[in-house]
Image (cartoon, rainbow, N blue to C red; front, top):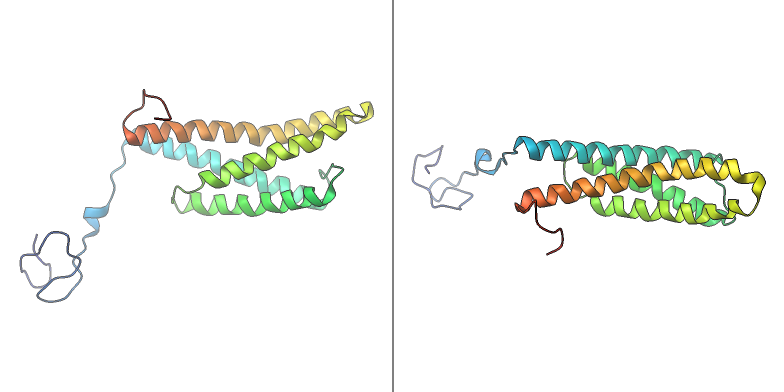
Length: 171
């Protein structure tokens, strides 16, 4: 490869020309080509992550207002609600930047929603609150379902990248 500025032959792996000192990093060398199937998996993963994040922000905002903050432990409820808003915002940030680092945040959101599920068991004690319990289960069950589908697509993407799509997930 030759320097674009002075025309001298370059040593492989250098970032600057030894003769003129200009940067010679070509962006074309570092562009990653994405196959159609990989792009499809990334798109589905992004849609699921964003849907979960937007739902977490919406669910958290409604909880802060007090509409769905049904629990005997109010302090824990508000801590989890604020955490779901912050983590949802981080997931949207990482997905929009295509950084592919949203999985740990999605797993934390999963733990938050499981905690909400556990806290909603208080509503089973009183039979008058059964409609609230069922509505709460639907509202908390939807992001749990989205997260589980996201994790399945994350596993598919990981297997696709590693080239072992038919092998086990854990080696």
